[in-house]
Image 1: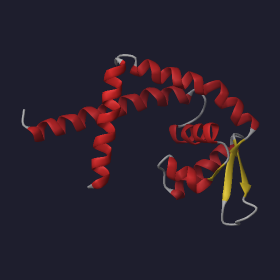
Image 2: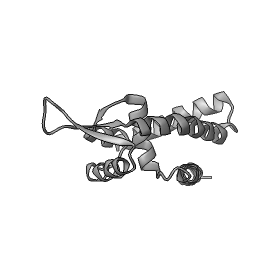
Image 3: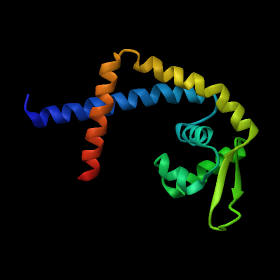
Image 4: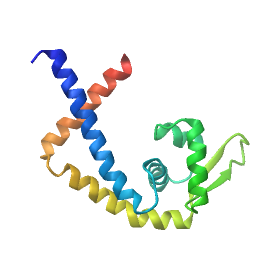
Length: 144
């Protein structure tokens, strides 16, 4: 197989694997009435604590216009609270409410277990190689 065809094959396999993994985790999160973006925000706040809203958007790779909508939805569900920055009126922080903390304490271990089950088909060395390879390709794509 020519190198160009192998590159296309690698891209297709990567893309399909991503979609399949995303579908499996999406189905898992729907039982908690969360989409993947909402879960990503909750997970980020759960592990990092109070964060500026714009920083959340950058870290989980969603547009600044979308992060406001996601925070609104999580606030309506009672999982997130906004807090103004006392030093800079342009900055607003998001933090988990007690309900948000309780939810993540319950569902994060289950989510982590789901991810572990998905990747259990790989030996430790295969997983390390995959991580290294994907980082390498990601960095190269960034440099393009």
